[in-house]
Length: 107
Image (tube, rainbow, N blue to C red):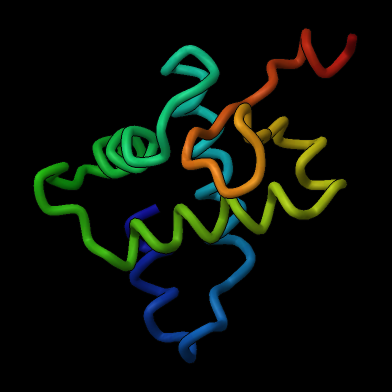
């Protein structure tokens, strides 16, 4: 993942490779599941950063923004939202993120 983020820096601003966002979405999903399915986005970002080997006291701003953008774009796309199970428990504009498990998706 670290290499993918470094490669992403070579891409013009505003144009991140799709692969990086998909990988971040998977990491966000894993973090949310490990946190019980819901958490404030700052906690999710810390968990993702920790899993990538970053010092959570100094998370790169670029990584924070990429995690937020990857969640937001996935949540706004109905097909992707269904695939990842992302949801906002308190509605749009909320900073509390959630993920539905496969059991909840099947119901």
